[in-house]
Length: 163
Image (cartoon, rainbow, N blue to C red; front, side, top):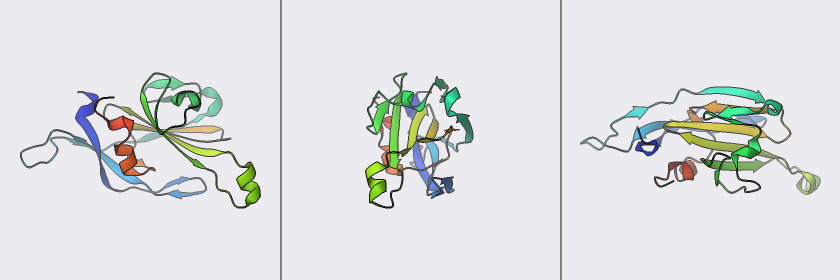
């Protein structure tokens, strides 16, 4: 099956994910075939079956079937654009959010980020989540709930037919 015979649809509100000292709202996804039946419904649907593993930062991690020594291998060197590629040349959607700032000192000195990397392998979406200065990298294979804007994900490099 070609990587682009399947795409995602929003299947509703997802379960909140506890990160960043709070719960993040999510969207639940499902995979659907681009091919439709005579009534316009997808020929095939698949609900993801997620598994999450937390790896110590110093050991590296596996994501979407590949080994990474550190999270910086998930994007081109010093290129923090959303549509990106990993060290293997695979498309990656990269999103980040700055740590909260509560006063002028925080705004001057705070430079840490929360980071999400979305990778696609066939009809599976892998999410890598890392916080700057954390000792863990969290990898969710075959993600069911995503913490980013659903339309941004669907319009990203991961779902363009001519990637």
